[in-house]
Length: 256
Image: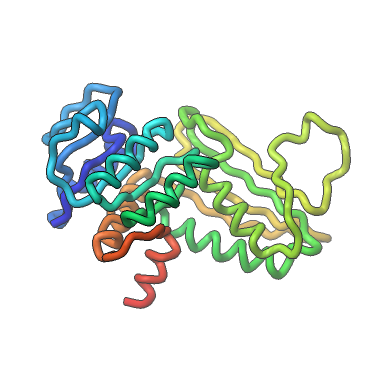
């Protein structure tokens, strides 16, 4: 049995994880952390980490990036492994994540879908084969309540593409500010927001007389909740501090 503190429990993903955990005997949500909403759970909900009063084995986080510093400090202080799913982490905060991972196991991914991990592998292979002669564009679509753009997943995909190219690409998010031809070394990243789209990511390799499209569509948040719980079980089996991701989980599944 894994006892979990659920950070961001009142958000859409927090609710999905709580519902998913109810149907699994091997995991129990013992407490939640959220400073918004008035949802009723069987477990207690605290508005900040320093008010937490629960014995747990791990934290799963789907909250807001503004809470990440206090989350990292709490997990380090309590020596709790962390499944970190919050997007928008960059710069000094990303450095803090890496530093904290020297003290505790951290599983970090901006997308908890195994399918997206496989998509990254496919686009890496395609970029290696086509990147010299094909233009590359990334399109991501999400619901109208998502605040960050481009999505963390789109940036993960862009990094997978960039790591296979023989040059350092330039990410272009908006072409309206300048009027010029497309540069060969650009990767266009486009964000669409509307309705209740859970998540769509498409990578286009556009060459002479053909276009290759590789895409992934998330049809339900249950997909990501299931991935987060799989990550929790994976992390529970790690004995050493370190920074892990979905690629490690997929590899562990292949090796099993």
